[in-house]
Image 1 (cartoon, rainbow, N blue to C red):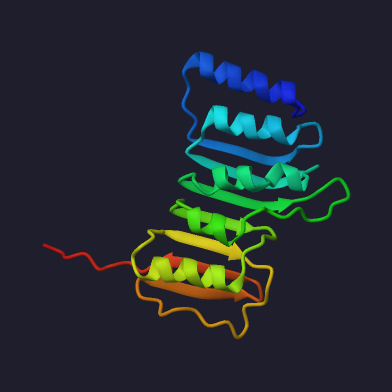
Image 2: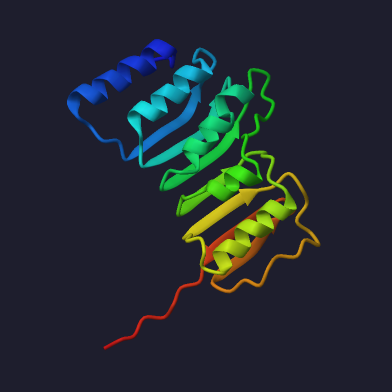
Length: 180
């Protein structure tokens, strides 16, 4: 079935009438070319998944992943967004900026697409996590800037590793459990 506004509406209607709660909503190896940004946003709001994945999705536009969609995505328990391309196979960025990164409540996530996060925004995010103000299990963020030479706040509870020139992994340090 090709994704379209009508198809998404019918799927959401079916899930609502059956009383289903969606744990994981995954858009993988598909196209959004026939889906309007407003219908996609309405669909994810109607389905309200705990976790959401967008991976290897063609036919995307900046409007599909605008600020409102990104605010929704970052409030899921888990999310992963990677390989979003337009009809000419150009990368489509997420509209995640420092403000939306500050609203993030996911405990585990991967952002492997371009975004508007700045060095200062990433530092603030890591500082909040390291100080215990924000909780996190694991994260991977692809930046639009090189990470070489960028200093981050004292790690504290965070384990930080630079994977490549533009990807940083952040995870919580496991605390030893007492054995009785």
